[in-house]
Length: 311
Image (cartoon, rainbow, N blue to C red; front, side, top):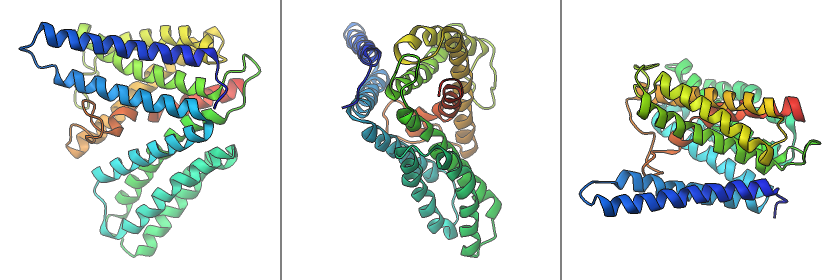
C-alpha cells in the first residue's frame, strides 16, 4: 500500500461525497419530473463513478499499479486516436512501433530515469518512426501520416505520462506529500475546471471565443472557470501539495488556461474529422479523448512547474 497523507484520503472522500449528492439529485429529479428524460445526466454520473473508483484503486494500491494504470490510459487514448485518423496501409507495421513506445516510456518512469523519460518520445521516437515509414517504401502522404502519428504519440503518450512521473517524484522537503497527492490535485483541478467553465458558460455565457472550433466556449465561462479553479487550487494545495500560497494561485490559473486549450485542441481535431465524440467507451461523456483532452496540456505544464520549484 502507498503511504498517503491525510489530505489524499480527505479529498477522495470529498469527491465521493459530491458523487453521492449528484446521484441523489439525479434520483430526486427522476421522481419529481417523471415526464422528463434525465438519461444523459444519469449516464454521466454512472461514468464518473467508474472513473473515480478506478482512479482511487490505482492511486491507493501502490505506485507500480498507478504507473500501469496510466500506461493503460495512454494505450486507450492512442488506440482511440488512431482509430479516428486516416492511416495508410503501408503504415500498419509502423503503428506497432508507436504502441511499443508506451511500455518503454512508462518503464523509464518506473525506474525514475528522468533523462530518458523526457527525451525518448520527443527525440528517439521522433526519429525512429519516420525511418520505419521510409523503409516501408510508400511516399504518397508521407508527411501527413508522419505528422499525425507524431502528434498522437506526443499528446496521448508523452503528455499523459507526466501524470505517472508525478507518482515517482521523491517526497519534497516542504511537507513530505506523496506523488499520489500531486496526481489527485492535478486531476481534480483539471476536471473541475472543465465542469466550472461549462456551468459558468451555461449561466452567463454570451460572448463566444472560438465559434468555429467550439461554439459553446464563451469568455464568461472561461473567466468563471479560471476564477473557480484558482480558488480551489488555493484551498486544496495545503492538503495535497508542497505549494506555497502564491504558487497555488499561479498553478490554479495555469491549469485553468492550459485545460481550456487542451479541450480546444481535441475539439479542433474532432471538427477536422467531422465527428462529435471521439468514442463511446464512457457513456454520457464520449470516448477517452473527451475525458483526457484537458490533461494533455495540464499534465506536462503542472509537472514541470512542480519539478522546477520543488524538486
